Image (cartoon, rainbow, N blue to C red; front, side, top):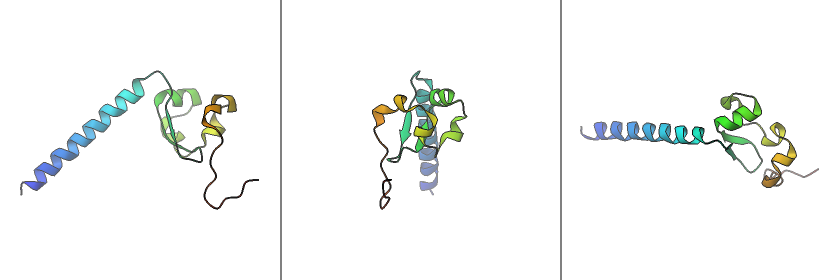
Length: 88
């Protein structure tokens, strides 16, 4: 069927686009973090990994607030509490 080759083409183009995006993000000199509302790292670029002194893959799920001094993360504000959590 013609659908399978088209799907394979789209999958290949998606992977190539993701690779290009990753190369651009990793080439910038600034650190880039994507966090969830609680401050856990969803994504970190290579510059952040260098600053943290850890492999990029080891940063996912960690709290940005535990890795960096508070003054470096002051612009983030306080992390949000999960639904139903009580503040101490």
